[in-house]
Amino acid sequence: MGAWPAVDGEPECVARGRRHAPVRRRDLRLARGALVTLPRVVVVDLDDTLFPERDYVRSGFAAVDDEVRRAFGVAGFGAAAWELFESGLRGRIIDAALGRLGLPADAATVASLVDCYRGHRPSIGLYPDVAPAMRSVGARARAAIISDGPLAAQRRKVEALALQAWFDPILLTDRWGRDYWKPHERAFREIEAVTGASGAACAYLGDNPQKDFVAPSRLGWRTVRVRRPGGEHASAAADGGAEVECTSLADAVRWLGFEVEEVR
Image (tube, rainbow, N blue to C red; front, top):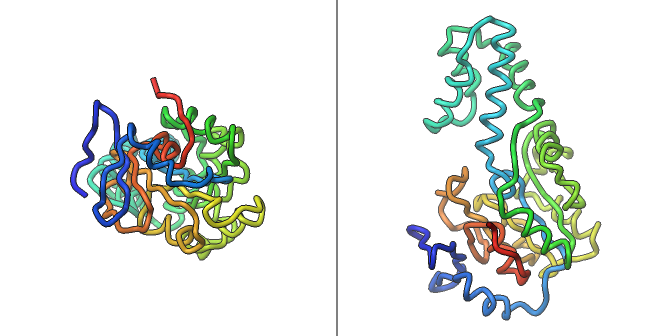
């Protein structure tokens, strides 16, 4: 796809068509004209769609840093873990950071610190465009969430962001076990059962092209990839089946046909 150009300083959406033609904000009205009706249900992902996941990671490392200081009297865990994360390491960061500090990384210690990470009250906030986008959606459709991840951690994120104000239902797939994380269809079929909507009356907005759009595409939903700069999956190839890619939630919602006020 190459770089994400801007027109008059504004982000673009890029339609997944034969020519991969850019759909600029000023052209979204024309793109919307191709849709017969607004979706009745707009379902969104959580991490890197509604808030920056890296903020949660940093918050979690800070919580574990406090626990390491308390348990071992050693400082520096948070800095070591963040450096490893920024270097590209994913998985076993707690083990590696403990090793850097010369601390034990036995199974019991690591499990306790993982629980601390997942159970902490995160210091996180929504992207600036979320509130105007969801106000627009909420005025004319139903909004819901489908999100993967360890259940305790995802619940803490939902609480910290007060997402119940905009979204119902909020389906955290880990409540059924990891086998039901995306791309499994179960959560998407649950949305259809709860709302009575199906097919093109539903839309899914997410960031991970490897798993987010497999099930909704199979069910005939509208699909939009929200490819925010700096997101965990922003550099992933655009081959995951979404109809269109946008660099903001606001533009994704506009593409579906909703009017969204400008983010100041």
